[in-house]
Length: 178
Ligand code: 3AM
Image (cartoon, rainbow, N blue to C red):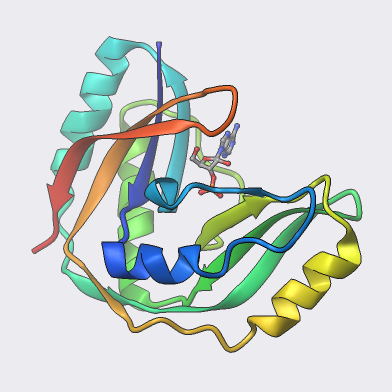
């Protein structure tokens, strides 16, 4: 089985800017900078033959290049606890259209529809063991964080190998945008 997801990679300069935000919250598990990405669609465990179908479906997608703007820091919560910290991406027509095309392509090859609303973000840390007030202070301190916009020229099918510490993400296939 392969554990897969579709995401936008980020250029090294932006990764460096995100990495500079890391640290200073006891209990937070910071994502290693090489793992930063913006998930378009989590696929999960699938058999290799199905992965080939996924690849073929993603390869049919035609979409334009676009500018991606990251802006501000946010949290995802579950049961009243902050589970993760992220840098938010500004919604844009081009990003939403690309995500919709990925979703349609994956459903066409038989994957179950994604039920969760698309909330574009780059995860910085898993924080279920950190203190809430520290996380709130972090979000406030970085509310004006705004790296220069990024030109998105391709999207990527990643495989994910879960490790003891961080997961190891391998870019398997890149799909060019026009
Ligand atoms: O892009 P982020 O970091 O928010 O948390 C995982 C990561 O999200 C998420 O997929 C991305 C790449 O691994 N993920 C992991 N398991 C998941 C699941 N069962 C999941 N997303 C949805 N359902």
